[in-house]
Length: 61
Image (tube, rainbow, N blue to C red):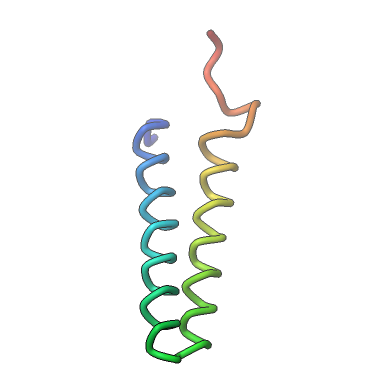
């Protein structure tokens, strides 16, 4: 099972790559692929919430 740090790195990379894709394709006037980049970033945010930051997933302190 992956640790919370690994899951956070995966989710952050998904968000970053989605935003880079969206920005670069928006600048190239390709709105469809830019929207898909935003969708990928949103999936990354959902992954971060579900696997890292949701209160019932946090380890007991």
